[in-house]
Length: 160
Image 1 (cartoon, rainbow, N blue to C red):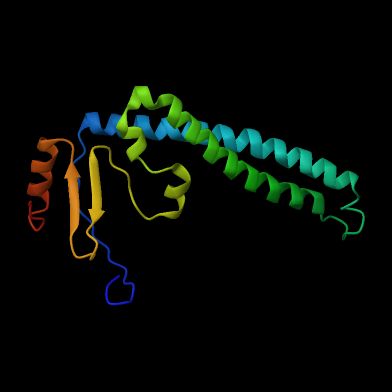
Image 2 (tube, rainbow, N blue to C red):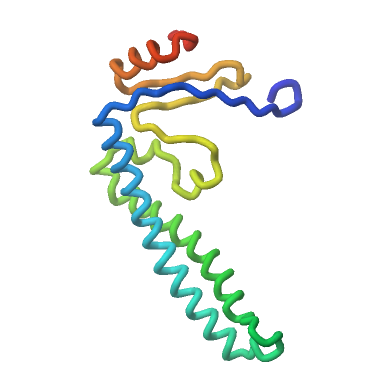
């Protein structure tokens, strides 16, 4: 914390992206997105159908204004919650199964659900971290050639 108050700090840097890094980033994204989507659609859709039908059988729609399906609203809310939870679990399971294929790149990428709520980008082969005082940003490159190109694109960033 900077003197007991939080301040938003934004930095934008041009990051070179080679073809190999692009393919790696895309492969990691697809390896997490497809299980996430499958978990969300399967569990969320199934929950929506079950809760909607069960709520209708319980008479949730009988006391409502005509044209408003309270059972569909309840089913949608339950499906959304269960869909996100199961999508998170499906993605975690896929990360465990695919770890031998992708190695540490899959573990360094943030979970897809976290990416929805963060204003950050994931770039394969690049790690960014603030120091404890939030005065310096430490960038770690897995490829020295990309680090050299980054230094040329961003002369204000000084290497340590």
